[in-house]
Length: 458
Ligand code: ARG
Image 1 (cartoon, protein in one colour):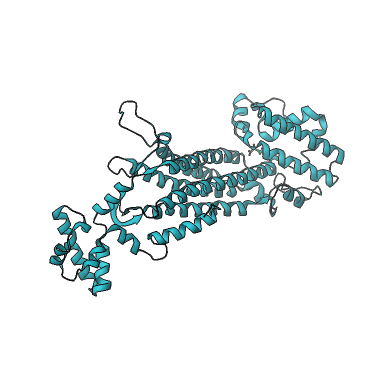
Image 2: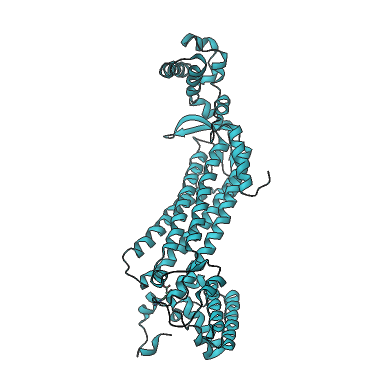
């Protein structure tokens, strides 16, 4: 395609290092769509004879059908998807194919194709994220009243509801979706017509191609349009943040599925056995979601570093933009699918969670609050009293709620039956009714809002 002034062909290794076809084949649908929009515009403008433009458009359809049926050929000599398509088009319709590349360069072509691809990727991720959110909300609904220990420093801190804990992840994913949506809105400008770097002298209609491809408008600066990849970095940054959230949930599943915790058991479908220890049920999928986050964050870093030293405009380094995006996208797809499956099928061992919440003296603060509010005890003093209560339970080897009223009154006579009731974990969670708090009534409100936002039945 570009060999006119060369006497010899490239060395084999040159061919190999230069070729992007092995990975940019994934852009074939976007490449065909971009070319069809471009040639239709060339015909409309009379830059290419309308009959030739129509022949090229039909030829592109045939190439597209072939790719769909047989895949894109892997021949390295074809270099990249843009040249592979043009070369096949030439075989099918003859020399008229040579008019397709008028007023265009592979630089604006690849920038356009890749934006189209990332845009589709964002739409797909949005759907997958909504699927995981639905799974979380469904399980939160089942467990709006189930009590578990809430942790700080991984120490039992205060009882919370399992529904509340699961909805925390719903919120993280809600922000992840909005980050992807922001990236989509920002990148939705069309580079086509920027040509190699400076624009073109042909009387093209950039608005027509932008519109045909579903972009908001043409990009404003041709140098920027062919040489920035911030749209891919926006995608990767949103993907990295999302993977980080998935990794934290994965870590909790690993922890909760361990024998000492025993808060969940994984379904057969989402665990693996050990070849030598029959008692084991390993959370491999959760561990791999946690592991994949490392690779996705790595992909973001890789492209940042690729881009950081490049002068304007296009440099071939930028061909390396695609593998990290494809890798991150595939890993995120798997991670989201696996996480959705795990969340849907986990069994929560709510009796163990409740016992752990009771065992951790996690309602001590509730008694202190109660003494402050009802008996008018200064908080510092109340804190001291509850410290003594915790000590008594520890000495007796029981939970706080198991101490009798007499035992409590022996510590401080201001403790009455109502104050004692505050020591139960159910009373503790029910009392936390502040907006965004863990009380089941609040959790149910949040579930209703989430169901509505996700289009789930009430
Ligand atoms: N395969 C190239 C890429 O992905 C296409 C653009 C090549 N442009 C060029 N002037 N060599 O970046």
